[in-house]
Length: 298
Image (tube, rainbow, N blue to C red):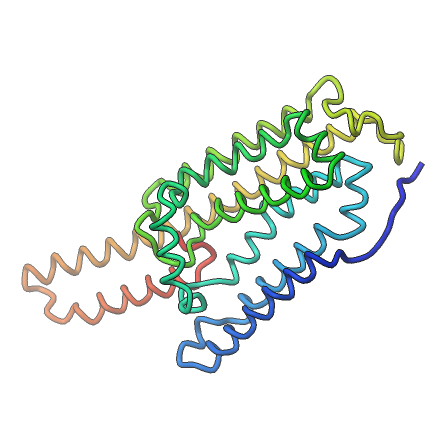
């Protein structure tokens, strides 16, 4: 049998996305018309717009409707809200685009204390996924709209907080350095990936809500659950692999700039490179631009 499939857009996520688009596009156009236009490339605009579209797609039909019948579509919805939606939004931001609200964001970070620390983002991301996938909570969310909304708000919030600390559009005192981003990424992706593996190899269906569903498209509840767990684990591994590659290349680039700077500083102290200052400034400018326009600002 085939589950009932409906197509359409839900109004609340569309309204939220429209508000985000309106505010962002206005600021993006203002920066494009200013001397800082280089900090508002088209790709950032496209990324932010895609973030809004991701929210509309994840919360609309057919994904939302099919999630009431098949675990795999519910999992797709969760991963879109947890990772894809926050990533697209944050890739669309940088320090220049966020300049009008920088002081407000920094004020909030100072007031909320440990809630703005990277370790809290790590714990929130991991526990958010594990706790909401406990059978009692997952079944409750699947049966009650209010709990379902709370579940989705949790995934979106912890996902945004988690990626905020890695992409960091606004400088912060708690910015991770050295191997911090690698450890931050590795711990979360491994722990959440283990949850996916647990779902994949569970000997029976863990969620009564889906166990009671008809065999849609010939998928038994255990098969549906196995596919969902495999999707979660695969998504976490893929994101971790790409991020590790980016972090490694970025670390090499920053180490090279720092080594050049130290070498010229030593030469200048020995009096063998009196004209090295412009080159040092050029290196600093190159590092600044890379930090602002690179794939990850860490």
